[in-house]
Length: 165
Length: 320
Image 1 (tube, rainbow over the protein chains, first blue to last red):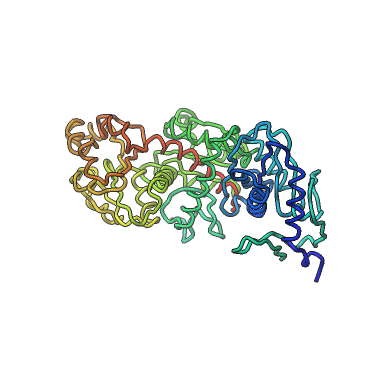
Image 2 (cartoon, rainbow over the protein chains, first blue to last red):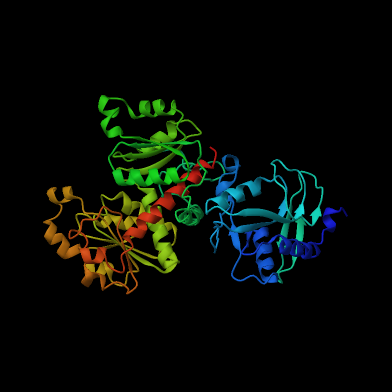
């Protein structure tokens, strides 16, 4: 069993929760990237005792591989139930890899306003960056062959685990 | 006429042109409507623009004038960040005797990525789709009496928005059905989406009995046509129908088939009233109904932009 397959998503979540608690500034807000990041943001919102719902970002309209992949799948809507202007944002995702998703997410965020700051929190950093992007909080760092995909899954009871294919 | 393959779809059954609703699978229509829902929210952002078609050139080729339709396509393409070139061909090259395919070859040499075509001849967009370079996409913005697929799709989006489920609905289309490409596109789309009762309502000269072959119920009596309907789609009455002796007079037509409050009261209490525009108040529809609670004519316009954004981004993302 490789290190990647031994990842305990629930244990990492506890570390993420502590990290986000530290990162979140007064009046700040959580924004999760669909779908894994949105699940994490939803649970973090609850566990941090924050009022209202976290923001949800879909990156479908800012993907950089549109000319190769087209509008693959149905694009979920971005929902930001608060003003972005002047707010400190903690952007949440499950896995940080090339950085392209985060680039698209920041562009999407800026279509709604101008945040005071944006920090990134992820469960897992798998390296392989293709853009100058770094996470402020990443409980685990793993190495995974380029042909493998890792993503977060959520069971009916709301517990997290990783799927590697 | 193009062999067995639907010329709108590639080998993976993905949409590469939008020429007609006829022959498109239900899943394709639903995918377009779902995608349009995503784009609807773009219009509410601070930045009403997404970069999907950045660097692409969309040519609006209107061989027949229609400022409004052209404008909606232009807005849709610009919100997708495309460069839009409007060619009013009705007044330029064809007037000088250039053939349609020569015009297309010329514009292709200017590196067009998409043609939006309005033409008075049925089938012109098909001809263009067949002869343009493989990477070029074609959208039919209305061809002759044949088809107006984006209007059909925006009508479906509107119906789905207000009624949610197509499979329980009665939809009445009222007016000049026989000359209307909108009516034909609506009928094909409603049929594909599973609407159990589609009524074609109007006088015999405009709603001939052979429309039954399209699977619709033909009604020459307005009361019968709109009774218990969930959706009423009014069509514009073109002035030339009046002078062409297909109808007695505008006043007579309004009395018989014009939608006023009394006739609307025969439909379901929550029925919606639609119209593709431009409206002739007092000819096919009463002013009070246009401005009334049940009218969704202006939302149709808003949805039309989102639907055209969806169509353009879907076809541009699929390769031949």
